[in-house]
Amino acid sequence: MKLPDANTFCVAPWFQIRNENDGSKRVCCAIKSKDPKSIRQSPLEFLNSPDNITLKKKLHQGNKASQCRDCWLAEAHGEVSLRQKLNGVLTNNSSSISKTWIDSYFKHKTDFMSENVMMADIKIGNTCNYACVMCVPEDSSLIYNEWRKNSNAFFIKEKLQKDSDYLDRIKRYGYKNENYKKYVKNILSNKNLKYLKLLGGEPLLDQKLLEELKNLPEQQKNNLFLYIVTNGSKDLLAMKEYLGNFKRIMFTISLEGISQVQDYARYGSDWNNLSENILKFKKLFPSDIIIHTVLQTTTILGLKDLANWANEHNMALSVGLCEQPSYLSFLSLPNEVRQKVKKILVEANITISQKTIGDEQHWPVEKILDILERTNFNPGEYKKFMSYIKWYEKNKNISRLNHIFPSLFIDKYQ
Image (tube, rainbow, N blue to C red; front, side, top):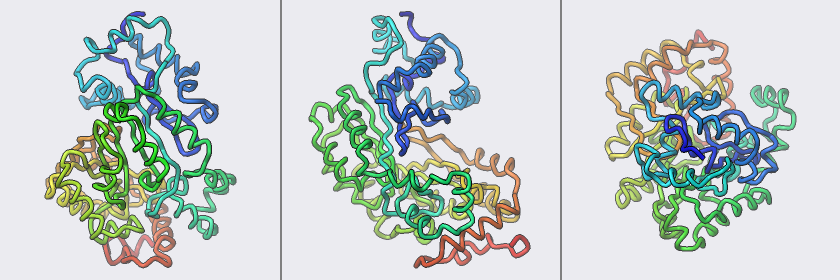
């Protein structure tokens, strides 16, 4: 077989698998569409499905497949794309795939069939000990329970009108799901697995999974990079010690702010204990922890304080964007507040850095400002935002948002 075109080749459709909580699979997070047939397929069956083989061929032969649009756009703007990051994971961050093991691999290939899963993103179900303001039932069991108890809320009605089976399907998610257990065993049975990313729910609550990771053969662990996205509620040092001698264990901690902003947005969080846990780990393993935050209306005014805290403790900060639900996106951010946000971002001179080999995008302040400029305020979404906040705060022992960020509450829009 000819060697792949380095300008388009990607390891993901050959060696990577990513599952959703419903069991559907993709080769990476950037490809949006999900094939329902993949729920019943094993990882290798999916990687060798007709559609995925077509994708391999296109990329191998130098064709820019349309489903990989995000990577082509990133590379056109001089950014490091997810394709390039993932290629780097399996080539020890080589600047090119040539003169690496990939050359030798394809010299001996005669077809486009995959034999190994070398990289995996495992979503471990929706079991979680937090009920975050921007979360949804498929990612949090506590949110699922709240939706079941409060089905008359406007946003729950809207969702169930469009998808009446939504909550019933989610009931099958979680650690006790037999299909999930089989899937995890299948992934961990791959002796050539090099990179494993765990997402939730909260992955550090799954004691069975942690036990399986601990008990992997030492040789396999020594060659495996373990990357865990967590809310940080569990003792990170104790967890690293329990899991043992992996090639590397890296944690991304999901934070929405500091102090009362964090405890408001991530219900169940205790900032004093959480920050102590983070800094205790950071002191001993400074390069193995980063902070990730999601930009959304309830917390955007606290971004400066979070960035300053991360900078003070010399921790990388990666940033995502909340697009759904739309009433927590920038669509619900009043123009008066936008001006304040812009001023804060410009004057703070925040440098938002990205050090993980995971799939989070690099979002500099300039990009955040550009999104604010291009996203017009929608008064209807603002009214939904206000209704949602009333629902979210009900029966919760937390500071109220109108006390934390009073400038978000503008009478003329309510």
